[in-house]
Image (cartoon, rainbow, N blue to C red; front, top):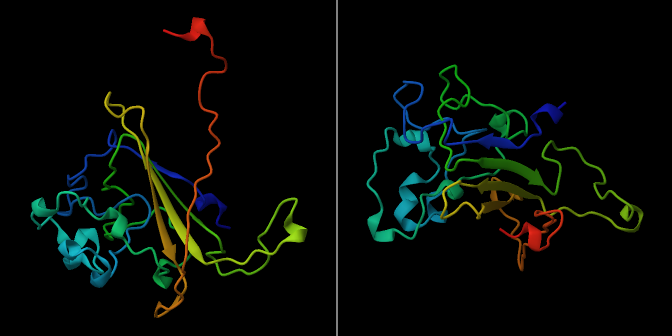
Length: 211
């Protein structure tokens, strides 16, 4: 029943104007693609951003904060959002269209960062609370899957500008979903890796292909 919401969201600055009140409701960029998440608690944010703790971006509309010039190496904390489970979501499809500001319009006032943003969520457990073995494939009879209860938000950004057109920025927000009221199951000695099927390129390569 959730397959129709199991998608990869795509947004673009070519379609939206960041930092602009697209829908005329007095708020700026309050409806991102998918569900807007609150920022993490203040004690889990860099000190300079602690004031955003547990609030949504649209709580600060219009943007009532000064640029953090003394910490220019810290990017604005879009990655500091709290992805923990929220029963008020109704069901676990983070990518579903959502009216964050209750103005009757869906995802109409977003803040894409690049000319091609991709966003997806995935888990090593069932976000719908259904149990059962999830170790599939030829080796499923010889192994047992024990989920760590990890949720991942993967975002990629790409621009067509000459100085960056051959680069894709990929961001992973990995959240430990083990908690009861507060996070209580700490994961130690964690490592993350990326598997890439790197077959992008010309079908053949010889001197005639060289320009």
